[in-house]
Image 1 (cartoon, rainbow, N blue to C red):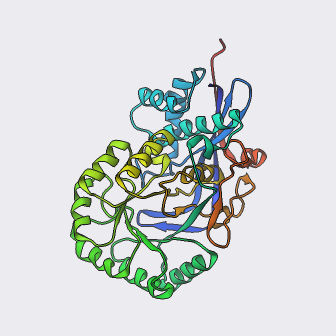
Image 2 (spheres, helix red, strand yellow):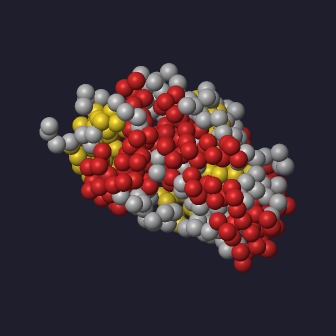
Length: 377
């Protein structure tokens, strides 16, 4: 039973070690929305909203998420007892349409707070099975192909088990071919298009078949499962869907239409762990492997992704890079690390998210803070 006494919203800025470019823009500094959930006994746990500064990945932003949490979502659940964290999902969906990233930050926080109160790991409460998870890396678009090959080589040598390259029209075959030639045919190489292509680009996308890619992620518009089905029938390379699947119903549509052969499950995109686990289970039934993508999270958000990736059908390496990949200094202790052979430990022995949040640093970095408290009874 979890009953919230208060939720504290904090926005911080974290500077990336180097700019990260995808087809829709460049990120140099990450505005991050953190939630601290406090239960009636005063025990607290942290969560993170993955919404970005601008609506280039989804319609949500950090500012719309803050507003939705403050006005509708937190008031719908605070001061109410919930026997199981999965019960929070339906309460949030009754409170507001849409806003899945805002909902996920709150709903996933309930899962972690439940784990802490029960003295269990977050992975254990979710039903995870793995002691370690495989880490992949996502490399942004580079101005120089030589630089991209260098980055990919360094990633392989560091132990990453999947190397994903961001692509866009006219910035696809040549850089991918150069990386393939540089790393050899055994490297698990993938491409991520971030919905930047149309079926008019079919000829260019077909050329990628010759590169032996593990997958092409989200080549077409996120709303379009039908055209992804057409495209998949024209390609040998498996299509991996991301933005296109934001619920278990959309996963079912993907399966029926054969719109893709792999799915990237980002819990923030689908509204939280309740939906993420349901999608995972349906894909397992259908024989669709899944993996966990990243959204440039801090170490708090990374904790949630690692816990989710411990479930049994997460059969491909996720975007689970260690803290030092992105940040000069993370906001958790210990920072997330990766072994020389590309594995990240799941913190089974530590209740809750498995890492300690550096509260003093978070409060120093905070550009705004707001506490929403339950009404006295």
